[in-house]
Image 1 (cartoon, helix red, strand yellow):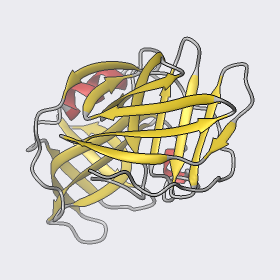
Image 2 (cartoon, rainbow, N blue to C red):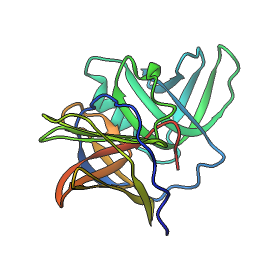
Image 3 (cartoon, rainbow, N blue to C red):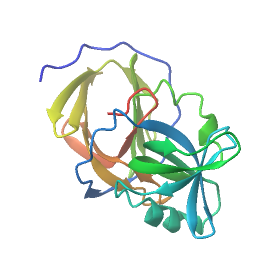
Image 4 (cartoon, helix red, strand yellow):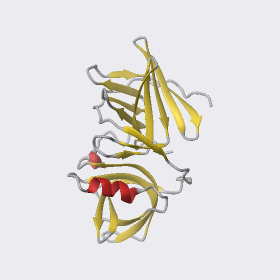
Length: 223
């Protein structure tokens, strides 16, 4: 498919933690008719409950899409910090202050965080990718992207996006004589330090040198 238009520069963003790649996700049905929400996960009475950000309602999670959210939550539950989830599904059977159900189809990320619900950049973010050894992060909006690397100043650059099929795509740019590429694939990815999960794998390539990491869509993109 033809590449997207070149995008402009945007403001610098903070550095995020590193990840490692895990197994591929199975094909998922279309999420077009479903609702995406962010919120907190808790285990109550043998059930996993999801409470949307800044909302008093609770939803019993039914993992109808086979996302393995129960296993992911269990692996993080024994460690400190609220358990944040970004997910998409069919929400039903709830009025204000009552308990409903969510038929979960897509899990974007699960992490320990007490502040993710108040992230001021989430809604305008297209993609966040990050890795380690050395630490790096790439934050993308429709105005451009910012590359941050350990020991180096942040680098804001324009980019070109190319769709590769099967949910894969890449972002490319040339800056300061360097060829910078980010290759993204729909593979589950576990952070080797924090244990958090993201729904895509990422490879950062700078002049052919590869660094692996994880990626997740922000609030302005969820295909």
